[in-house]
Length: 241
Image (cartoon, rainbow, N blue to C red):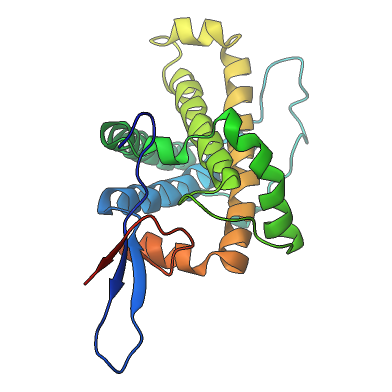
């Protein structure tokens, strides 16, 4: 590590036999990153489904916003069946989401890996070229880091959405104990509105994330399962095994 930079994962070359070509791979995702990623994915699905059921049973954001027919959520997208059932699902996986997120953030800061995924102003010029590559199939800009500017923007934004959903969720979970936090958010109905907007942010991120993985990121998907990424675009070092 030098200054504020974190070295990218080392690229290794594996030779299984003389007859087969060598395989280049980098260990991008330690086990804790993979475990927290998939636990977060599962908990998000449950929280969104149960949250939609809670909203259907109690569609209120305060007296100034119409409550009836504000949004018709199809039943297959809802989880819990009724208000109490949805609340049980929501409150259970709320803690899974919080603990998993806390472990992820602690590891990122303790290891210094957060510097690889944190979006900063210097990454801004590289966002649009990556958008054109992912969604308009234009040439891919040169890759010099494990995470490109668009990925950094996505991961930083979803982390902030996660923090926002937890803080607003705590107000909804116990508005008396977190009365000060509720006041800062403009009251209970406003906190519920911010909580729903955070969910909408996740709903906007997930389809784009899945599309990018399906079209361009199969090796990234495999890496999130096993840790190793085959033939990474960057090449910081080359250790032969």
